[in-house]
Amino acid sequence: MTEQRRLRDVFFSCAKKGAYVMLSNSDTQQTRELYKNANIHQVFTNRAINSDPKKRGKIAELLITNF
Image 1 (spheres, rainbow, N blue to C red):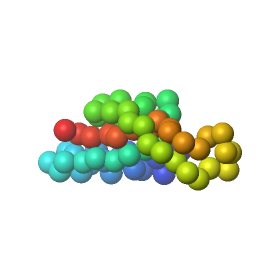
Image 2 (spheres, one colour):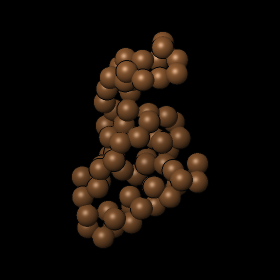
Image 3 (cartoon, rainbow, N blue to C red):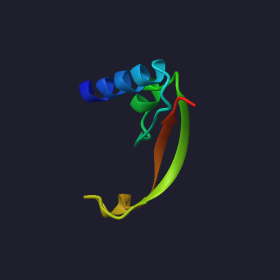
Image 4 (cartoon, one colour):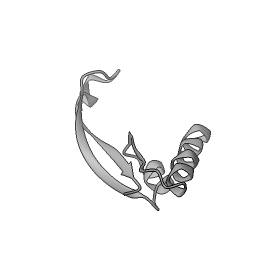
C-alpha cells in the first residue's frame, strides 16, 4: 500500500505542475479510492500469464488520467 500511495502522490504532483498524466493499475476498490479525484476509465485487457489458469484471459484494468 505504501508504494501505491507514493505513486498516487507523484501522479497528482505532476498533474499540479501542469503535466498530462496517465497510468494504468489494477481495478480494485483500493485503486479507485486512491484516484477518486482523477478520471478513471475501466478497460479490459487479455492476460496470458497468471498462477491461476482460471484468471487468464480478459481482466479489468483502470486507466487513470488527469485530462
